[in-house]
Length: 327
Image (cartoon, rainbow, N blue to C red; front, side, top):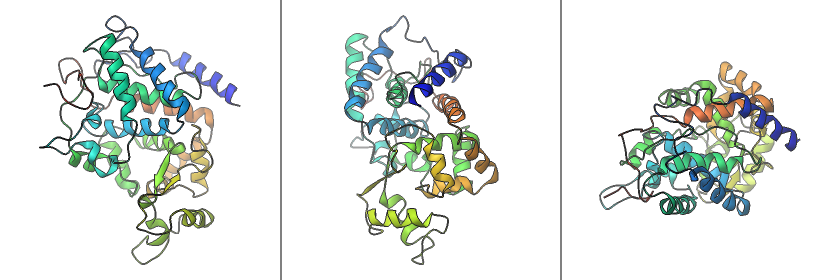
């Protein structure tokens, strides 16, 4: 099954070729570093794959980091900046406190600075690492990442809180959140499929188990058997340390199993369950039950997300270190 899937993915990538890559995201180009740093993408992939080979939880972390970066000021690596004495940066906002893998980004940046100083942006590195980490299990890239992004110089925790979709969102707020970034309901459903890998903290969904409407009740839309299982993991509303697989039994394998779970009312977050509350969205969930369709659509939505409000040309800068702006 995996081999046939890999063949399918290679076919899809081959067929899509350069369609929509050039000119996408205003100045991004598949061959941006071809002359200025020809080994750039090889370096990113080799270091990423080295780490993922020994830590299978990393793909989910990098996919989430890329998503959280793009939803705040666009894909400009602002999520990588450290807070300063005068500013609380994005990475210190509540939605980002559980992000991890920054050390891998730093190692890649350090290697690239030695190879081609001041050439490869942190924003491009993050976009490539997200793609390469998820693609590791297939041995071939799952989507195209045109490059040429510049790095932002502003990072505010308040903007992360205001822009990153919450796991407590209903369909209306999710739809608006994605529309604000020029993403459709189709993109919303497809990108939610990223929850097929990774974990969730109890405090982001335990209200569905113990206090859904503020009356000590459970969310009636949650599968009762699944709810009983979750209660064995999350013992109380105050538990903010325990983690649970978002895709039970398959949280380290990138596939379309998330949608099968969703159809059984086993979406972990309220924002997952919300996808079934709108007919149009629910119809798209049904389409994603077909693995071929999901992989092709995920590819397209990720390419679209990776171009949100990118800085190119004379905008932004190429940071020497991903954690601080250039002085």
